[in-house]
Amino acid sequence: MSTRQRTGFTFVEVLITALILSFMFAGIYAVLNIGNKNFPEEMGLLDLEQQVRLGGEWLQKDLREVINSSSLTVTNPGACNGEISFSTPNKSQLKYYRDLSDANGDGRVNQIIREYPAGTRSVKANDISCLEFQLLQNNLLQIKIDANKTVMQKPFSFSLTEKAKIRAIDE
Image (cartoon, rainbow, N blue to C red; front, side):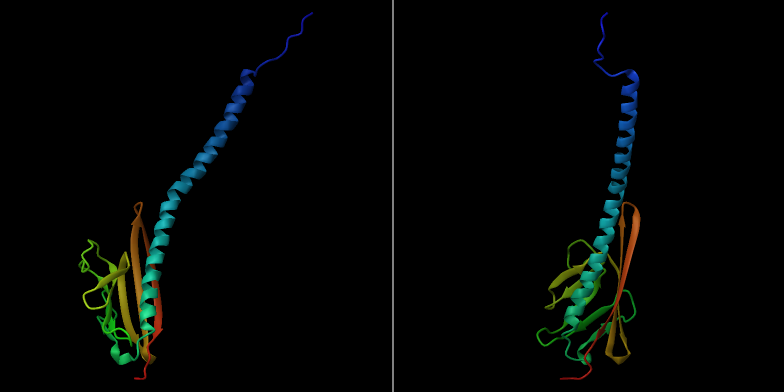
């Protein structure tokens, strides 16, 4: 009598293995597909938030140096195209505004522009839909920055409202 040794896989074993592998690959594909969709959206929202915060930080940094409230001028208070100009001990007529007409010539609008010295413009934030300044009681300046951006046909928006204390006493 001869005994036969088994040297391969049966057809059923191959089918079961193929089925298990196909479920594993389908799961991996689903996870990667979700990540591929969400990553650009999340990065777009993160970029929008960073732009607004960066613009707000620049404004706050310069406003901390204002000597007195009489050196501060707000144009269009409470409007989304507000403009603020002020002087500090080291800088005269520093200006911030929302660029509606490509004032700096870079082909983009809706940016926060810092102008100092006069005629020298630098972009401090992009995708800005509203830059609003409002003088409140007790020498408080309210700064509101809104931004909008569309990523993969999905609109995103972010808003930031801050208050800055302006010195009231002329020194």
